[in-house]
Image (cartoon, rainbow, N blue to C red; front, top):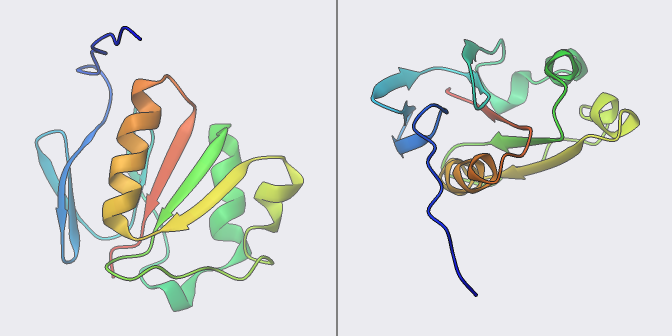
Length: 122
């Protein structure tokens, strides 16, 4: 199978991550973020324990196909009641450690998927 190099220079891509930070393109961010292929904005929750249903419902305005939640160094799964608005809108959802979330986001973005990464920064 022939593979083609995909140019994603005009899209947000995770360049690195570490304890309490992610680097998108050439900019380091600390704190909780919403990252789409085209934009970056702050996200309200600062810790896993402070997640609410509204934190996920607000993502629907961005019309995602899939939402990836980066939960830090350890994989943690939010209760389904927190992500019910995404499920009701038929939006895919996956929780993973932040490193896996960064890699998955980059791959899906290169495939022109409507993906949103939400990073818990606390």
